[in-house]
Amino acid sequence: MKNAGKNEISDRRAASADAKAALLNAYRAARTAAEPGRMARQAEREALSTAREERRVERERLKLEEQKRIETEATERQAAVEAAAAAETEARAIAENARIARVIEDEAVRKANRDRRYANRKARQG
Image (tube, rainbow, N blue to C red):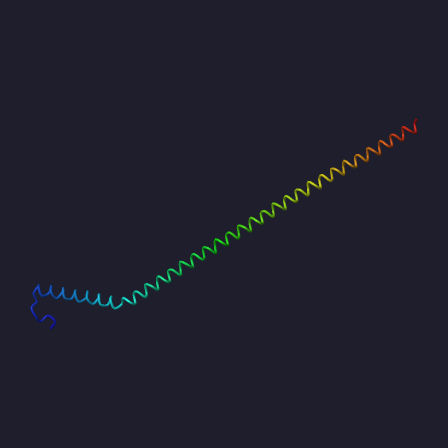
């Protein structure tokens, strides 16, 4: 016997408006009651977000440091390779110059021996 009274349109509208107002008041009361918990959850979310951002920044910083370290090592290795190549080139040039000097010296000795033999032969002939 829910609707035992008059069932006029104005009664139904008033009942609907009362029901909506009751729901709205219940919602506001529940929201007000949950306010401290909501604030705590929001603060916790903000703390988690801040911590996550700090970890991300730290990871990026470590990644940049590692990248710089790798680049520095690569630069040092490249410099070492270039220094070794320059030293090898210099050693080859020194060895080549020494070999050329020995060849020239040997030629000079052979020429001196040949000239001496020629002079001896001329001296014996006359």
